[in-house]
Length: 171
Image: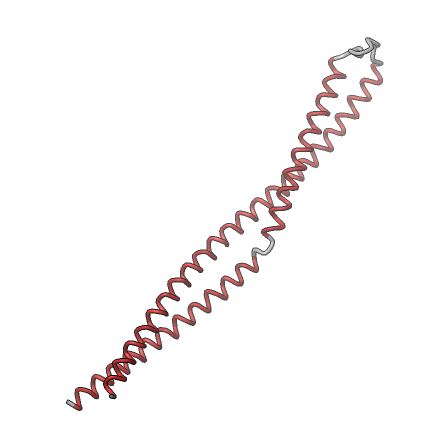
């Protein structure tokens, strides 16, 4: 009987040691995942400022496109009218030519600005997509940590149960 109790006690102690070893590995894994989350979050700390820049670029894009429409309307007006529709006076051809040339030049400048703006917008959009991928990875890691914490709690309860059995054996 004593021998069986000793073997049973040794079995319980061995099982407790195994569970504690697994728990230590689980804690280490949780720490590693937490460190990775911290690194990933550090790498995406520009997210808020990018969203603000994207909003501003949307606003500027709208303004530039409106400016292009205004310039097109002015160019069309001078190309299609020989006289002022309001006062019926003839428009000087040199004045019209200069005005059209000036508006075309302005339009080219605005189009160049719009092109640069769209490049910036594309760059920001790409970065936001990268951030989204990183956030997905962070979410995966958080789910893994939750699972590991659950496993760790289960292990702790197992050790407590085995420790209770061991204490009963001693009594």
